[in-house]
Amino acid sequence: MPAGNPNESKRTRTDRPRLRYAPSPTGDPHVGNIRQAVWSWLHAKRYGGDFIVRLEDTDQSRAQEGADKRILDSLRWLGVEWDEGPDIGGKYGPYIQSQRLDLYHDHIATLLKNNAARRCFCSPDRLTEIREEQQANKLPPGIRDCCDISPEDANTRAAAGEPHVVRFKTPREGTTVATDLLRGDISFENSTLDDFVLLKSDGFPTYHLAHVVDDHAMDITLVTRGEEWISSLPRHALLFDAFGYDRPEYAHASVIRAPGGGKLSKRDGAKSVLEYAEEGYLPETLLNFLCLTGWGHGDQTLFSRDDLLSLFDMGDITLASATFDHEKLAWLNGTYIRALEEDIFASSLRRRLELDLPVDVPRPLDDALIESIAPLIQERITLMTDAVSLVDFFWQSQIDTPPPEDFLTKKWRDRGREASATLAQVSARLNDLTDASWTTPEIEQLLRNLAEELGLKAGELLSLVRTAVTGKRISPPLFESMEIVGKGLVVERIIAASSALS
Ligand code: GLU
Image (cartoon, rainbow, N blue to C red):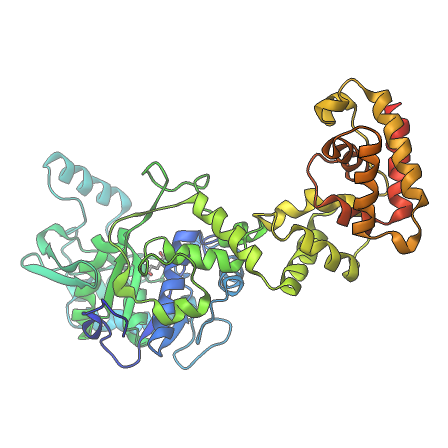
């Protein structure tokens, strides 16, 4: 047990925690949603338990084609592994709610038999009328006594195929107390609750019913989800009680806020994990970042996957809303990029460049070339997507020399001719280097000597050469780059720049 965690034994109720991530396949899950998955996985693994993925697809109208695959891809990309799930099955399967309808119908039958639920045949107009009345009388919203039909009549009408829903018969009096790991006991007056729908007229269960049935059937011990579910918690508690099932523990996490304090919009960072992948973030970064957004361990900022697996406890997540910190995200990514083993960085670079280099560059990219370029930029980029604009010149057959006024350092501005003459000298000198001498130190020596000879500052000469060879103001280290580009091409580029500037 970690230090400073006195309540831990209270928190981990069972010997074998089972936590689940239960996304609805209605789109790509954004980072806040995936954070719950990551936390559930870490907590389960830390305490030797299971992590389960269950697809909650009972709202058929909102289902989005391919979303299930992208949800699993997001987890895989982050390195989150599940023990049971829609793709791998498991002994509590199936893990897709639309394949478990019989189970929900059995539960509905039980509740109807016990008079804990009722069929409701109210038309949408009737429900609107009730809501308007409640509003006018300043009564709490929510459908309660909407239709008074005997169970026998209701069954007859249902058997005749009349469309209807099934509602829970919520007690009108008393208090429902539900416990949250982070917030303690929360009390809800039953008089403020409604007869919520359990089974929709399309025969599909609502979230309320399906997840309660499944969390029980799958032996889930701890549920973590966003705080927006707290208002529904008494419904779920009442349902567990109505079935005579033990309730799981709950930890409702605070939402991630935008830097200004408001709701996190897409622009502020509420993007999907796969979008971050496309933008050049590393999985290590996102994993570390998501965990740190709402959880911490002392003042440590860098957490490897193994650190997280051995340190994370759901009881330690903070109640205060965490802010999405872009600077930290970028800083973490640069840090993780620099920390990558050279060969791992080289293979990430190859994958990235194969996506980002122009289509006319032949794939696959040459391994030896990638391996020689990688160390030149590993320290210089924050995102993997920064790479292409730094290194594309290695693959260009021709460098477009920009006009002196918008490219060259001050020294050469409006002095195209002088620049051109200088480059002509550079190309002649470089051309005299033998192939064996085409090495970083000899190129450097040559150019520094030449600058002195010409009465130029080294930087003035080098900026000119950099422009000619790379087409950029900022590039990877110049001498190393020249060595890699090779003598023939370097000389050719410098001659081309010289004539463009004349
Ligand atoms: N399907 C629900 C959602 O995606 C799950 C909420 C929960 O974790 O209970 O919001």
